[in-house]
Image 1 (cartoon, rainbow, N blue to C red):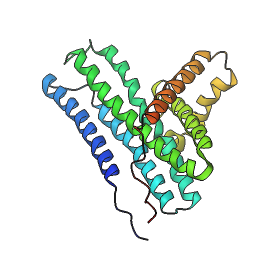
Image 2: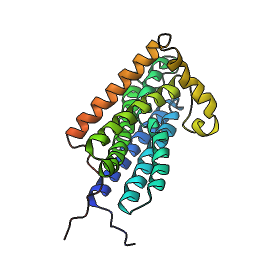
Image 3: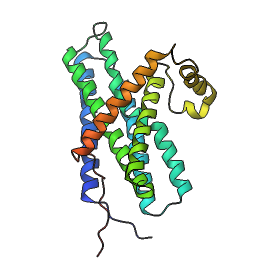
Image 4: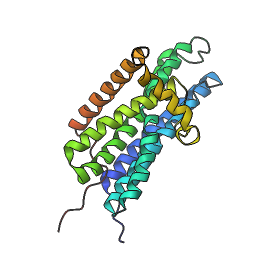
Length: 232
């Protein structure tokens, strides 16, 4: 099969995301040079995890264009959904500013800017990956169903953020500790009233992600990273 050349749009998108990630790394390095230590090295790991769903979404997108089987697309798509919460999860790293005064090292405005840079890059990676997978779904089952899929994915992403930030689960726990993960998910469903604050937080997070995604999509900032070939 003839490989399609990488489009200018894809190169520009990848270049911009790489530049943003490099700037994030530079901020952590600058903080370390200034303070002689860094309490924010975990941001680098979180940013690496945020790239995983974007890479998997590209595999799904390219696989669909090259005629990969539905089974293959579902397998890679499931992995994508499993890792998707890692991208917007970085937004919750703002909680670490509450410990700033214990080990300052740098002005709080610098730490806030640094976390914002990582969070913004993570959100872009997550939303772009969702846009790619949504496009694949739309071409299979239609646009309306694809938007329903996107909303469901963002809802599951909110659940993943809660599991990671509050209950300290990781994405791979779905594979290595599924029973513990299912028990944690079942508790709010079994007794919604006792966990009403958790459910309210999940709804609020889903709405925030959905509104942000819809606005960026409407503005055209989440267009596919590669054009479809035109008919000659």
